[in-house]
Image 1 (cartoon, rainbow, N blue to C red):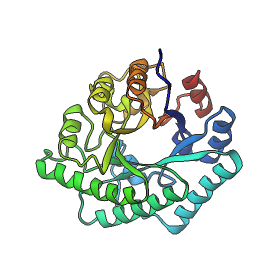
Image 2 (cartoon, rainbow, N blue to C red):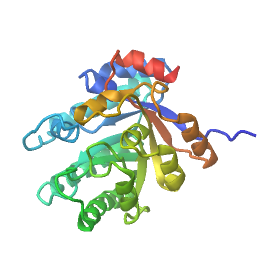
Image 3 (cartoon, rainbow, N blue to C red):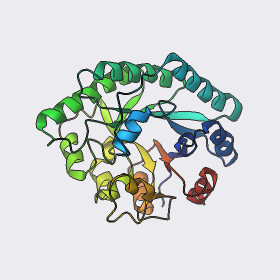
Length: 288
């Protein structure tokens, strides 16, 4: 007898967000039947981090999040809930975590946003980024400092009923299977879980299905994203290989089978950072 599906599916706002028109995504997502959406913490995902981790170009110090930025974002999400019945599932934060000068600012911003998540009834804080990849060999001390910072956020979010998860990602501190295993061996999983994104993993020659089999008990959130034609690509070009679900190489049936077998009852958010068509057309193709 087939297992009952206990997880729900939502859609990430960033296909519209990166184009500067997030408000247009809400009525469309509601019209096609979605209830849950995820968004980035800042209105531009702290452009500094987007450029840095996607290796687009060098940039100066990160811009500070102003009260106006925060309130505009809050108004946008309130409108999505009140006018379209959409629910915020999570927010995605990029931080460096181990820079002693930057961490107090990062921590305070993310903790403030965690309270914001609580006010919306959201249950997940997605953390990405980390110290720059490739700048120097990653030491055991680097991993311990990285895990400690995430655990600090996780301990805080747990008190608010929110689960902190880390998202392995291209060009970030954890992007390969070896790095992920190294991280999972030391992090306190009572405080920090995983968000699995198969597209990032396959580009780094990792098997997301095997990773899910290994770490399913610690996976609290999932991104459904596909990728194709990425062999031999470097830098930003790899991000252009992300595609609609089913158009790439990710084995989603195997992923779903594991989710069903494990009685996964969290959320899976369909995601595409940038559409080669339109945000709307890509969404429709992914859910077809």
